[in-house]
Amino acid sequence: MGNPKAFLTVPRKEAGYRPVHDRIHDFGEVEQTLNTRDRQEQASRCMDCGVPFCHWACPLGNKDPEWNDALYRGEWETAYKLLKKTNDFPEFTGRICPALCEKSCVLYLTTGDAVTNRENECAIAERAYLEGYVTIEHPERNGKKVAVIGAGPAGLATANQLNYKGYEVTVFDKNEAAGGLLRYGIPNFKLNKQIIDRRIKVMEQEGVKFVYGIEVKPSDNPEKPELPKFPNAASFDAIVIATGTPTARDLKAPGRDLKGIHLALELLSQQNRVLAGMEFSKDERISAKGKKVLVIGGGDTGSDCIGTAHRQGAKSVTQIEIMPKPPVGHNPATPWPNWPVILKTTSSHEEGCERRWNINTLEFLGKDGHVTGVKVQEIDWKPNPEGGRPIMVEKGQPEIIEADLVLLAMGFLKPQHPQYPDNVFICGDAANGASLVVRAIASGRKVSEQVDAYLKNQ
Image 1 (spheres, rainbow, N blue to C red):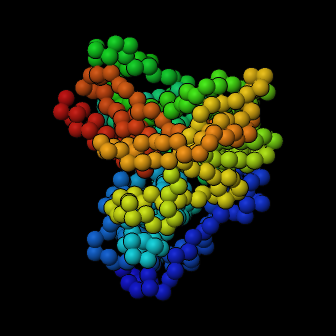
Image 2 (cartoon, rainbow, N blue to C red; image 1 turned 90 degrees about the vertical axis):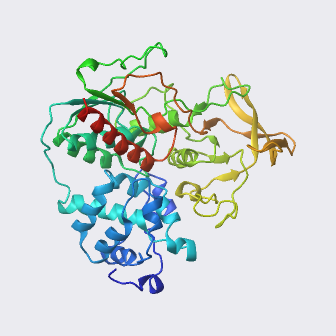
Image 3 (cartoon, rainbow, N blue to C red; image 1 turned 45 degrees about the horizontal axis):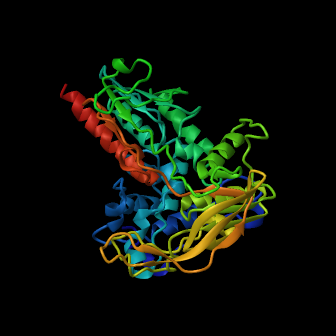
């Protein structure tokens, strides 16, 4: 390590966010950047800790100590090459990953102030594009073709790796552009879509083909192993299904059919399409302008709805969550190596939002066919004597939260797949259920190895 004592003298310094009064008026990325000197100084905090728990915790196996050391020394190209070995898209994860590595950092476990791995990763990726370290490679072709169904992070990682291995890869996607939830689920203020376009352009120049507007349907007969149906399916030597988790978890409470109640992705995907230049009629447009917004669901998707509602001009925003409020800073119930279940306050929450926990939704209320409020009740959780999920018990009296726009952000259902032939593989959220982008990329890389091994044995 270049500076083995830096962790003792250099405090953690984050880039931080743009001021609230500035950022809520546009969809530009909220996160700022550090100057080169400060960024390299932050990289110096990475210790020679013997056993790098960060490397173990990262689904991709990123070698944080190695590229942090290169970054500290100013060897940006070396840092990028080390990062590229394990991560296909550091410009994505450097912006939106919850940084499992940082929650396993020895500094985090001892002082609470981890190395700024995620921000360092993003800085390395951006410098790589700026300085031309991202070069176009032209792999030697092996004569075999692979179709990837779905252009989300898992599908893109699969395509990228198989392309490097010499396969002719075609990516099919039902949408008008690549990215999956990166493009249609994550707001621009967290991930500018030009970042995705830049990477897709590189992949295209390296030989990956993209075909849009093709929705692939699974076999109608789950008992009969058939190829997925899409153009020229039989011409491909292998097929990878990376269609994510398209079905959101709904809330079938009375009044669900009222107007003004939407699944979170209906709002988020439409807003991203509007920013991309697509037009919607007045009846189609979902807007929070001048409205009292209620977000049901306390996760990242709910947070994204909050930030979007603010930028659309919401009158007020409330977020409710059925689970208890997590503790602040440290949770003895989730010690390392578990993911620390602690209170998370995002940039969107900082922009203004009433947050409530232990709230169960009973009924949607409306007038003239449009939602006007939601009847809710405070609840509590008691241990289940048989183990498993705690038992929900009523605590307070029912109350009404006024709302003329309700957004349901309660996660996604794991897809069920029929039995496919041996040359069909499944990866990412399509295989494992909704999870993190970094896990989707890791799954795509793993499946690419499985496809490669399968085809080499044919």
